[in-house]
Amino acid sequence: MASWGQFPSPGVWRRPALRPVDVVVFAALLALLFGLLRLAPALNAPFLPSQAPRTVSTDPADLPYYAVRSLLRMFIGLVLSVLFTFVYATAAARLRRAEKVLIPMLDILQSVPVLGFLTVTVTAFINLFPGSALGLECASIFAIFTSMAWNLTFAFYHSLVSQPRDLDEAARVMRLTKWQRFWRVDVPGGMIPLVWNGMMSFGGAWFFLAASESISVLGHTYALPGIGSYVAAAIAQGSLSKVGIAIGVMIVMVMAVNVVFWRPMVAWAERFRAEESAASEKPRSMVLELLRRSTVPDLAARPIRPVSRMLDRITRPFGLAEHPLARPVLRQRTGDVFFAGAVSAVAVYGVWRALSYVDKHIGLAEFGHAFALGAATFARVVVLLVVASAVWVPVGVWIGMNPRVSRFAQPVVHVLASFPANFLFPFAAAFFVAAGISLDLGGVLLMALGAQWYILFNVIAGASAIPSDLREAMRSMGVRGRLRWEKFILPAVFPAYVTGGITAAGGAWNASIVAEVVDYGHHHLKATGLGSYIAQAAGTGDFARVLVGVVVMSVYVVGLNRLVWRRLYALAETRYSL
View 1: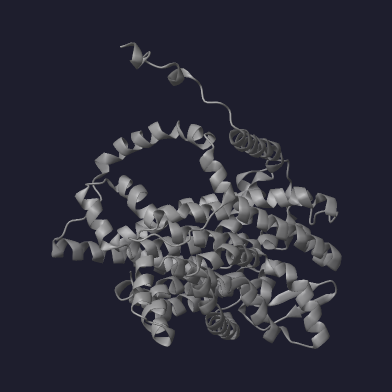
View 2: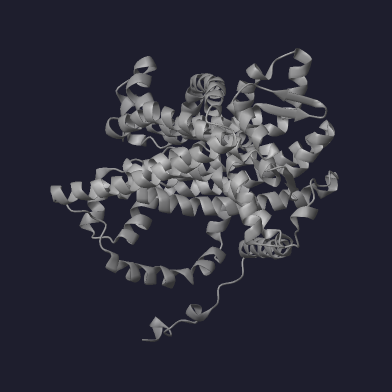
C-alpha cells in the first residue's frame, strides 16, 4: 500500500503559483476601476443652465482627458443599447401582436434624427437632475444610445426570426424555459451578427459625437468635456491644425478600442458558429488569448454563477419556451380586434395633438414645404444606396469569405467605419469652396461617409457566417464565376445585406442633419433638403418646425421600409434563410 502514496497527495493542497499573465490582467482591471472612480465625481459636478459653458478649451493637452470622457459615454451607450436590444427584439420576434407595433415603431425611431431626440430630452434630463451635470451627461449618453440601438435591434430581431428550425425543435425537446432558451439558444445564435453590428453601431455613434457633446437646441448651447466638443470648438475657430490633432487622437483611440475590445469579441463570437466543418482559419486576438490563459476572469465570474442558477429557478414558473400548435380562432381574432382598436386609438390621439400644435404655431401648409425638401434628401439617399451597394457588396464578400484577408482588412475597415466623418467636413468644406462645388451635390459624399459602412459591415458578417461545408460543396462541384454569385454568394448574404441596407438608409437620413449644413470658420454651406431644415429649426428653438421635419422624415423612412425593405426582409426569411 505504500506505493500508492498518501491521500490526498500534497500537490492537491498546493496553491497555484501567481503567473505573469494574471498580474497583467489584474493590473489592467485595477487600472480600469481606478479610472472609473476618478471620472465619477466629474459626472456629477455642479451645473446651472444659465452659467453652463458654451464651448470647451482647445488646448491639445486636454485631448487625452476629453478622449477618456467620450469613450466612457460611448461604452455606457453601448451597454444600454444591448440591454434594449435584448428586450425589444425578443418581444418583437416572440409576441405576434406586439410585432405589428414594435417593428413599425422601430422604423420610426430609426428615422428620428439625433437632434430630434435632443430637442425633446435635454431639458427633461436637466430638470431630472437639477443643479448637477449628470442631467446633461444623461442627455449626451441618450443621444449616443439612439445612434446605436436601432441597428443592433434590427440585427438581433432578424437573427431570431430566421433562426433554424432544428434549434427551435431542440429547445422544445430539452424543455428549456423561456429564460434558458434566450441565453442558450437565442443569444448564441445571434451573437455573430450582434458583434459585427455592435462594431458598426459603435462606429456610427462616433459620427454624432460632436452633436451629443456640444448640444445646440432651443436657442441654448451646452458643451461637455469630450473630443466631439473639442472638434466643434476647433471648427468654430477655423483651426484646421487643431482639428488635425483631434483626428490623430481619434485614429489612435479607434485602433486601441478595436485591439482591446472588438477584435477579442469577434474572435470569441466564433465559438457560436454552428456548422459541421470547421473554418480553415478563424479570427484570432492576442488580448483574448491573454484572458484565456489567465485565471482572473474565472475568479471574477464565480460569484455570478450562483446568481445564474437562481435566475433559472425563479424564471421556471413563467413557462417553457414553446407555443401551442393550435389556438382557438375566435379568441385569437377577438384579441386582434381589441388590440388593433387600442393601438389605433392611441395613434389617432397622438396625431391629432401633433397636428393641433403645428396648426396653432406655423400652420399645416408647412408640411407641403417640408415634403418638397424631403424629396431632395430622398434623392441623395437613393443615389447613396445604389452606389454604396455596387461598391461595397463585392468588397464585403471578398473580406468575409477570406479569413486571412479579414484578419488584416477588418481592423482597417473598422477604423474607417468608426472614424467620425464629420471631423473631415471642414476639409471638405474648404475643398468645395475652392472647387466651386455646391453642397447640394457634395452632400451625397458627406452622407455616404457616415452611412455606407452599414452595408459593408453587414455583408462581411453575412459572408463570414456562410457555413464552411457549403463553401466546400460549391468548390467541389466546380461552381465558379457568375453562376457562383447568382446561386450561392448573393442568396447567402442577402439577409445580411437587407439588414445593412435598411440601417444604411436610416443612417443616411440621420446623417443629412449634419451633412446638409457645414460650417467652417466664416464659411457656411447649406444644401436644399430636409436635414438642413431640421438643423436650422433645432438651432433656433423652433420646436414646431422640428416636429414637422421629424414627422416628414419619418414618413419618408417608414414608407421606404414598408414598400421596399420589409418585402425584402420577408423574401430573406422565406427563401434565403440558411
